[in-house]
Length: 106
Image (tube, rainbow, N blue to C red; front, side):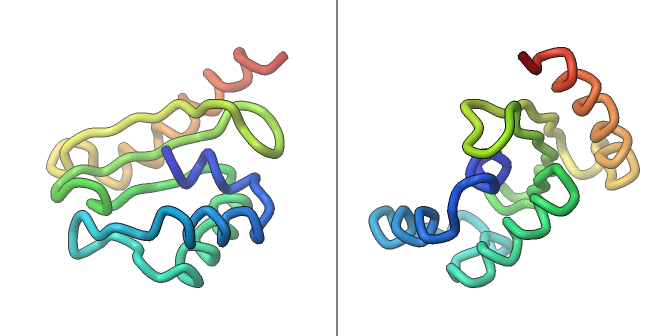
């Protein structure tokens, strides 16, 4: 959900946050290079949702969508073990999450 939340932030603000807090590795899939994260945030903005493919926890897949425009206050997500929450199911969850977010817009 973190990528969904910061994707609407200014790139300079994101870089400042990264310098302040660092980029901790949780798994071998964790993004730990600032430029790689900035590129991933561009993808999140382009597609309108963020994904996590075992970046936070091995074997766990997640999809998240921010609520609101620009700097979002919160996001909603769906997560599950990769064995059951396949990429196809993750992609199907995007539509469900988008419908939920539409109901939360002011």
